[in-house]
Image 1 (cartoon, rainbow, N blue to C red):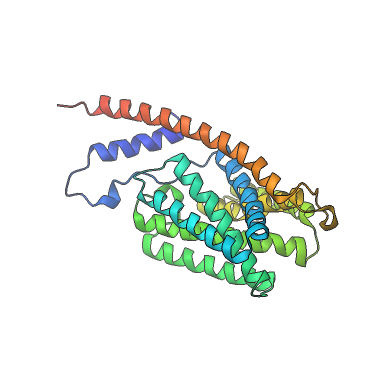
Image 2 (cartoon, rainbow, N blue to C red):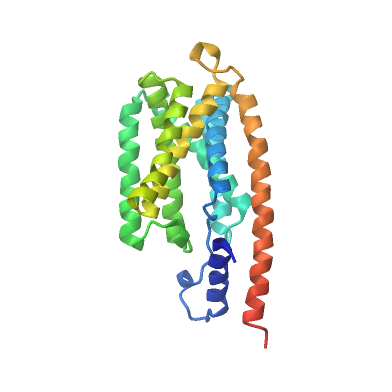
Length: 283
């Protein structure tokens, strides 16, 4: 039995022993996916897709209508996610996509409409993220995503995810624009930086939770930088493919990989149910 199966089996075991009077936070199913290579690939793809989709909608509809549409999509996706009893791949990743789109819009509106420099918004989002982490840990005594089994922890989780997307957008635009590195060079920079948490964990024993969130934050500027490079015109040192076509091109592998995750998830659930039934047969 692999790690994901073992963890899911532990959940099934907990539910099998659940009594009506037990507190619900002790028996909730996990609401987030296992952290695998496919998880990171889909995460990077969704960050790029969110960046170009936000840019395309903003230019096509205007910042205000696009922001309103993005906000509605975000609310609908998060309501569906929060109402789900357990992790469902299509529901979860739809929420991630909408967080990606709206998080980009927030960072861009702050800069383009409000005129706040990316250096300032980067600091503000960093402080906001730190505040959420402090509140989360003070309340739950953990920041581990493997413990997202209560509504309160899930709320902290999604607040963190939203801020990381906005922060990553600001950081990516800061390096590409303000610092003058350009999108491709910024993408290469973040490709190197995202390897640091893994190396720090293997070499220096960095805490796994810290390594996860460090890498998670960096996926945003990594994916967004390369997506922008593909979408922006040559005058801005890009490939000039257009934000609309790049968005559609990224949707395809995202859909394929989430479909794979959904099929694997369903198969695992069938195995878990069989495991639980053999351990605790009906009387």
